[in-house]
Image 1 (cartoon, one colour):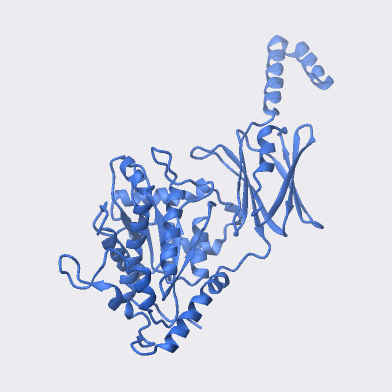
Image 2 (cartoon, one colour):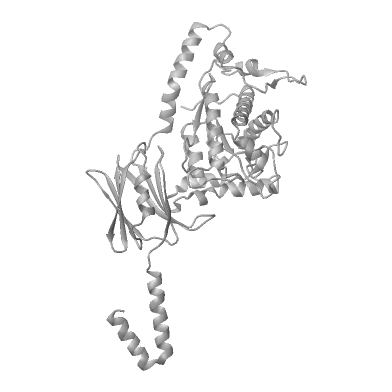
Amino acid sequence: MNPKRRQMISQGLQSMGSLGVLYLLLTESELVQANSGAKLLGVRIWPSEDYTRITLESDKALPISHQLLTGPDRLVVDIDGLELNPTLKDLVAKVKPNDPYVAQIRVGQFQPTVVRLVFDLKEAVKPQLFTLEPIAEYQYRLIFDLYPTNPPDPLMQLVKESARKEKLLSEEQAKNPKGMATEEDPIAAFAKKDAAPSKKGGPGTTQQSPPSATTANTQRIPFKRLITVALDPGHGGEDPGAIGARGSHEKNIVLSIAKRLKNKIDQEDSMRPFLTRDGDYFVPLHRRVFKARQVEADLFISIHADAFIQPHAKGASVFALSQQGATSSAARWMANKENASDLIGGINIKTKDKQVAHLLLDMSTTAQINDSLRVGNSVLRNIGHFAPLHKNRVEQAGFAVLKAPDIPSILIETAFISNPQEEKKLNDENYQERIAEAILAGIKDYFAKNPPMARRG
């Protein structure tokens, strides 16, 4: 005990008696406990082209300070109240060679109760460091988000990826101008190519399976411009989404389905896909909407495989936005659960773009919602050709991710991961393929009847 503390106790003996001494001793014990090192529960790294996230989870909030250094580029972080341990050393081994922004991490005991982390960077970054309060199954999380100072332009990247397709199709049109659709109706061939009588004889019903690759290659679809479809695999990174009884994570299943759908859209002459995330990392809800608008998407499709409070709930569902409340209590519950993704995944509230936040509040339009209902009905009908439906109509609720004011947007629950039978289906490659085929058929049905608007400027 330090001399000052001894003097306080001595004064307590003289002025307050034995009870006073006991109080001072208890206070000393509490101070020692409060200053003891935090327990580190886990370290995680989520690299992506958008940004790299480093997460340190602990049983207490950790005070930090940081500085950026150049020549070479480094981020130095000092964490108070922490001692070097094997868990923290594991962070060094978690850096992947393909991480766009972090070359390596060095850790050391800078002071008796201060750990220093040095991030050797591959390029200059704009870091955001913040702490998340305990939520769901997480305790305190210290977040380092390393954003590039010159972020990649998703539209330019998309243009580069689709330039070759446009060139090949333009050459094909020049060689075979006969039978092409007019410039005013760029995708009229959709109806001819894909509409056919159903088994029940109904006119204009889309086939359950898309045409083969051979058929698609011989029946080129002329176009005035490519239709851009933004595919949004829900959750990711720190946010696993729903977890099934077998341990399946929603974030992994929906990413697999989205990638299958992307590959199918890539084979279509008149369309190009864009993924809001192409790996296991977290994307805030407002960023998903913003990225779709950056690439001037004609359609936004958010893909999920959610859970419900009742394990026997089953069937696929399609949702659109509502400005007047949810169409059912289940739809409201689902929207609230999806909208909590930001809290679980972890966003830096202090730096959230106020303009974008306002966009998510109330900027949707009646026209956008009506178009969303049309495409939603088309997709739901095609899914219903082979899979059970939870509801036979498109439901509506206040999903934040559907609030792009100028893009028809739907959210698809491909099945309930909380249902053991449906969880098994969701992990089946054949089911994932059929879901992707049905969504594509619904998209094509919709654009056959609702050609996209011409680009501005």
